[in-house]
Image 1: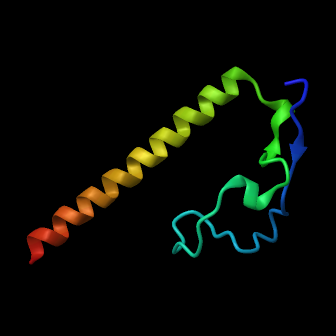
Image 2 (image 1 turned 90 degrees about the vertical axis):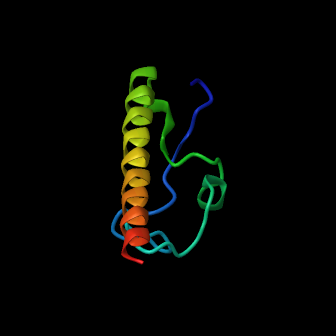
Length: 80
């Protein structure tokens, strides 16, 4: 963490090309597209506990999205 940097690539009130969650996808990106360091946020403020919490929340959100897609797919298939 001694070399971690804090870098915010934009302002919350001006998302630019990024869109809110569940908005239609308009582009693909990786962090190096948005910041010089590849970091988005305050990396020095990170802790192992925060990392675990973030990972758990992200995994739960992905699982919910995958479940939604799977359910929609089944319903759409049955309607045919």
